[in-house]
Amino acid sequence: MKLIGIDYGRRRIGVAVSDEDGTLARSLGIIDRKSRPNCVDELIKIISEENPAALIFGLPLGGDDEETAMSREVREFATAVEQRTNLPVRFVDESYTSKKAAELMMYRSKKARRDKSLSDRIAACLILQEYIDGYRF
Image (cartoon, rainbow, N blue to C red; front, top):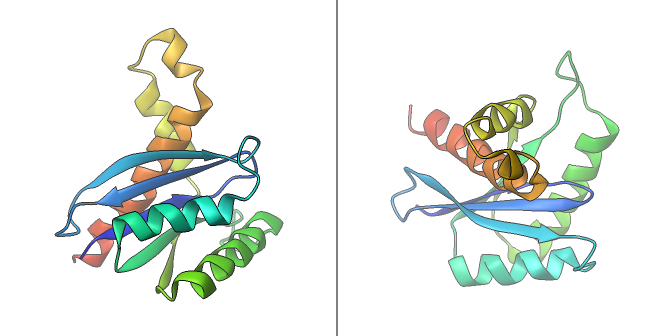
């Protein structure tokens, strides 16, 4: 079962996809919202090309797992995408994905560590892989 993972951000949206068996996540890249203001259409295009069974969104929760302004924004965006694709939407707590992505980037060159889009691509993979690993067990 192929899945798409989405790391929503106000500047960039990281997108990852699983293999056909739904066991391993890989990056599809980012949608730069500054250069592509109609990011829902861009995401719909990617979803159409990949034909996943479900969409997995990272959900930024507060310290006590409470909803935040950003988590409500993610839910609104996810609803807009869900309505256009008719695909089920699932959420994964993304609280530590940025930290994990930064840790992984420490092994990259100094120039690569400053690449914010790389961090968003890694975060999307981490969100999707966390869902896959939790879903399988």
